[in-house]
Image 1 (tube, rainbow, N blue to C red):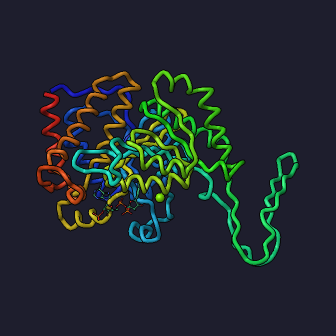
Image 2: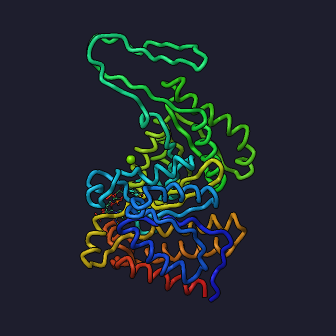
Image 3: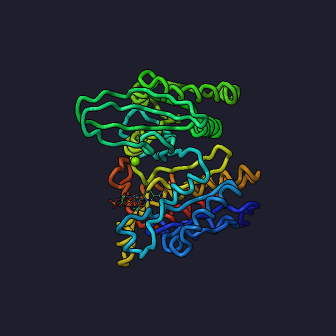
Length: 404
Ligand code: NAP
Ligand code: MG
């Protein structure tokens, strides 16, 4: 069989622990036998981040900007315990945070659905993609405890010296106070990423805030979305037969539960944090959830939504074969290869991505799966629990048949 040729390299960001082991197995079993893979490789494993004083993360993000498409393995975000374990000179920042700061944009998370593993919500027939605005609000807020009676004010001093002043509260005793912010530029780029992703994936876009209560702050989000929709996306949406729908966050929550799925739900930072965990859990498993960062200027970084699966890695180090689920990481590869094919006009890459995804879903639907899924399996045939490597070999066999 002739291997599929690529013209532009994918930016490949390797990672840590169990997912690093899966990364190599995935490449060896289901990518390299079929694709003449061209990547620019960056080792974001914690050891190499330490060796390069984290420069490798910055370089990888810049390469993502240069080439447009990256695929990333899960990485450790160091905490105090990791500083000891890896003998770090600094508690390096989260690579995802660094990459996001360089690329900007929005993270879209979507569940991978298979027959035999049903969402907790009976009406959901299609995936619900959550788009979380990953900037500002309570995550960048300034807050403190008010010690006792007094007046709290919100003051803005403009660069030209003009000031705005509003009383927040006349405290009659102790309490708390918080100042949040966001920027038009960030909200605009969030809106554009969401509209563009809806067009790319041909799905309706929902957006929700609490603008009835937050008449300036949340209302600005609503207005910016509407302006960008009217000016740049209305025609495209109409041509594709998709819809932009704005509603209040509490109404959105109720509608999401009653819906059939099959749309993108854009959420402010906090709502996205909370709702993405609710939606992903209700769909089944973090190991079946993909994640893509889309920047407003059209760069894409694909990854799994889960972490490095540390607990399995420690078993692996003791010589045990683990049954870690590689599906989300597989779909990160297929997503990235499909996008690369789209940008370079290589149809064969898109077809390959389809075959890889179908073989993966077929494998599970035939009753062959990793341990995490067995517990949720409701299919006709009894589930057969396999190791990660056996699972990948099953997928490979199906791909060979399909591509023969
Ligand atoms: P995790 O790696 O997502 O794993 C948490 C638990 O979820 C696992 O112990 C496992 O449960 C289950 N799980 C997750 N993915 C699975 C898979 N593919 N197959 C089977 N089971 C899976 O989260 P964590 O243990 O909190 O974090 C570990 C490390 O990952 C941390 O250092 C963290 O910084 C990093 N992290 C990185 C990213 C990223 O790079 N995007 C995201 C999150 C966390 P059982 O043990 O019960 O089988
Ligand atoms: Mg969270």
